[in-house]
Length: 110
Length: 112
Image 1 (cartoon, rainbow over the protein chains, first blue to last red):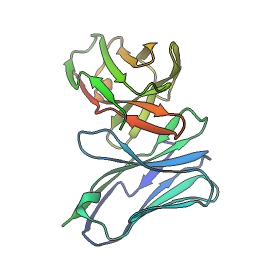
Image 2 (cartoon, rainbow over the protein chains, first blue to last red):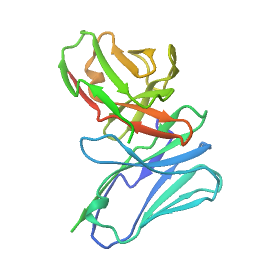
Image 3 (cartoon, each protein chain N blue to C red):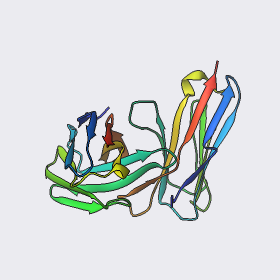
Image 4 (spheres, rainbow over the protein chains, first blue to last red):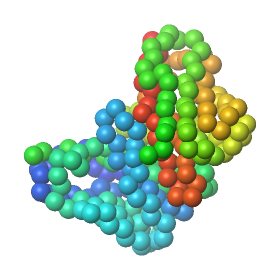
């Protein structure tokens, strides 16, 4: 059983559209991270959020940590083909172990 | 980017044979991790290390063992490979100051 569930699992949209990916759990995390992974490569860290309610922006990407620190969302504005990839959330509990979400595969069609 | 390498990059083996995967990092990070990635499961932690000779189990550790005799190397061993261990294995080292995990390129293991 995965501690973190992501939705949707697959997402295919047209260039220029907006989208939101959700990462949900019934457990509390001390911090939550978002990674992007491209085919044949390892995940690359995008952002870390540590405070409940925290919002961070990275160009067209907006990340939010839920007030109760159990969930997070990733919003992409005006998606571009370069945003295509697998998006993974990961939560830290004990401080040394990270629990990854099930992943959201995003395809942005030109 | 941190220098994380994994070897081999691809391996095909038969059920019951031992397999060792190697992870090498050049950043002197204290923490290192082994994950497996399977469709619909994201990444799942197998084992991790918090220093030389210091290791602990993750959520899917059954059938796997690890060793860390030097800061830069973290080995993952499948003592007797099974078909359920067919997967892509990723190693990561962690910069404790920023909590950033740097991942290697992965090893695709097929157990026939």
